Amino acid sequence: MPAPSYPSWRFYPARLPAPDWASEVLGAFREARATIGSTESHGITSDEALAAVRPSLEEQGFEVERGKAAAQKIWRPVLFGENGKPEVAYEVDGFQSKEMIVMEVEAGRGAANNADYRDLVRASLMVDVDYLILAMMLEYRSGHQVTRSYEQTKRRLNAIYASDRLKLPLKGILLVGY
Image (tube, rainbow, N blue to C red; front, side, top):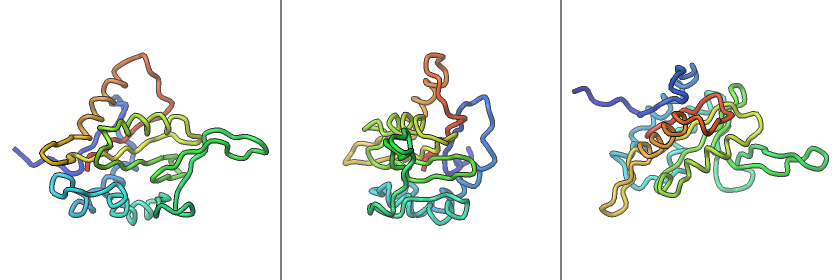
């Protein structure tokens, strides 16, 4: 049996092929595998994972969060108020304006704390966002417990896209398992 490719990924909706930009994004995760591969490396934080893929993503035109200081964060507007000033905005890990892609990289407790749902809802509310890249760990180990965040999120997205009850305003979601 051949070894699984890295990173694992799936594009939604499944009836459409992944956009051309997806292969370059996946390449950023592939290049950083030695640092962020969650089946080999344990205890990596989302900030560390984001830092590892940042150089490649920036070459692709992404703005990528650089730290926790206000000037290093990236905000996407949701609602505008008085004089057109953003009244509600959400912090994101990355944004690429050409294709209108927002990116979130989760680690550790991402799936257990439903961060994937939060990211999905927030991306759906943001102005000028057509795509969401949601990067989840393949495995997160805490003591003897193993959480497979990518698989959990994949099951959730499969259910959302299989159901006719929830219509998302996004053109697509690239789920990445690192």
